[in-house]
Figure 1 (cartoon, protein in one colour):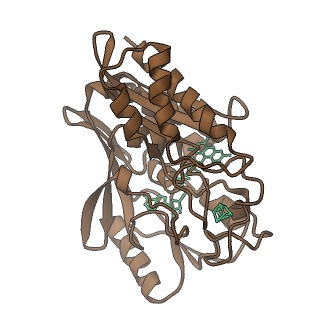
Figure 2 (cartoon, protein in one colour):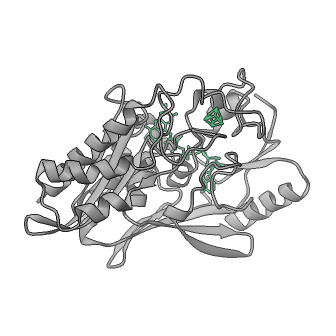
Figure 3 (cartoon, helix red, strand yellow):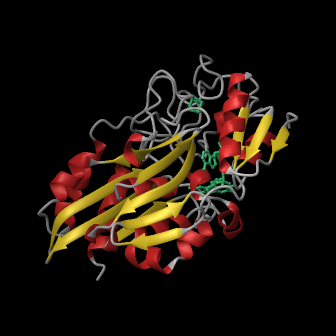
Length: 332
Ligand SMILES: Cc1cc2nc3c(=O)[nH]c(=O)nc-3n(C[C@H](O)[C@H](O)[C@H](O)COP(=O)(O)OP(=O)(O)OC[C@H]3O[C@@H](n4cnc5c(N)ncnc54)[C@H](O)[C@@H]3O)c2cc1C
Ligand code: SF4
């Protein structure tokens, strides 16, 4: 591990000032929250900050529900949110996405903000023994395109990076039109989560629209009838403690036996959480007949591109959509 100084500021204002100051002095600094992703990356020399600014105890950890919807403080843990009654009852897709993530030990430690900013699980990114990785070392190439790419994305890729986005929570939140409250020294702003993550294009190392030093303060999820009838389906190599090969987050507003409005987002297949508006449009007014669902799900494959080992994801994601919509639709 590269040596670093751990800063423990007394409040958020001091943390934001420290981080801004570190940027100006050209001494690389990073935030750390639960540390479950950051510490792994430090141990493997993937990240080498000179200063770590701890957010522990500085950010809101409340889980609040009101007529407008849900607000999750960035410091709330995955375990706290997954087990909250109002989340389980009103936004089941969020609870299910979290319970299908990581392990109980990790979920007890990991925070909402950290989850949304975890880095990709691309093995070439996480192993500095490989020199080619544009995300880790801009301009070095991409070892995955012609390498082992079973876990990689088929949507939103570029010739510079095909890494899949790793967060299950983000997929559920994108399906529910969630937003992010962002704080920086001297200000704050809100960003729709669907616009928060950037496509890799020519600069895969820049992953979000967060400016240096900004923090995620909270997540907001609007109340909707669809959120009540929502479901997260995760397909993975083993039943627990594993990232998604493919996942589907679905929220449905029903009109009797028919779908009035569908929200569908995919995980494991996109370079960012992937909303599929064409599928949603085809599902509007549709019944839950499997053949109808199958035709709508096929539209998710438009624009998908496999890289060899991950070609199977293009079919698998369509099947995941069909199953997730059928399960959400059957919910009372
Ligand atoms: C064994 C294992 C299995 C896992 N399996 C899954 C899985 O199946 N699905 C899944 O979704 N995830 C999985 N994860 C990832 C896990 O969910 C993340 O490691 C965790 O959510 C990160 O949260 P943290 O608070 O520990 O973040 P940290 O590790 O502290 O930080 C992560 C990143 O976020 C930044 N950061 C943290 N909080 C903020 C903030 N409020 N504002 C701005 N920047 C911030 C840090 O600077 C850092 O860059 C797994 C992790 C492990 C170790
Ligand atoms: S897919 Fe992205 S993260 Fe993985 S090696 Fe290529 S550039 Fe690096």
